[in-house]
Length: 217
Image (cartoon, rainbow, N blue to C red; front, top):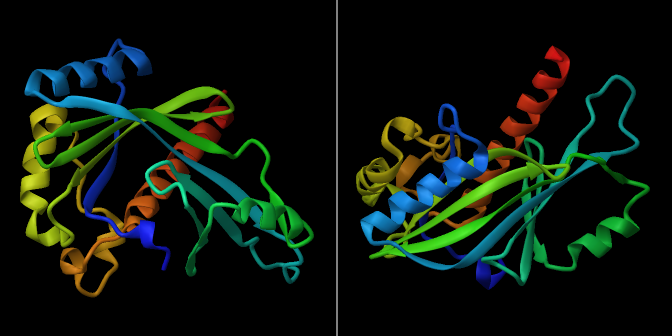
């Protein structure tokens, strides 16, 4: 595995837009709450995801999807996740290979999701508040909280939840499915693949919300 994919315990969740507020206004409110706690802004971050359809499937079989993801926290690597299958940690120039494999994998135009925002540090916590966009349109808000001293989520899960409640209130999510599906659950050492899988689940949720909204209109 590529060295920069080591990680600490992190939780990624979607935060609802505050009633009567825009996405940006809600993000600004979260920034203000973090700064009131004493968190210090430390630069920015970006996570993105491109979707590819596998070609040449057997007739009648559903199309397999491949997700290629990048994270500014791990600039030397990218992550390729097969839908319902294995994941591959690859060099950052994996996108060049995907172009060469276009006879096998077709880029799903209009499906790219990008999450950009600010990084904050508060004691041993690293917090990232991002705006998720599709086709240059804001679709939702993400919050990632990482507890830096710990690599086993089960050893710090209650602490993570308590800290997230201090600025998110009732928006705290349940246990991420990426941990629920592991035999050891929360007590399996975490890595950045777990974090990126949580982002992927959030991105797919936003895609479905967009499709549902389009159908309603």
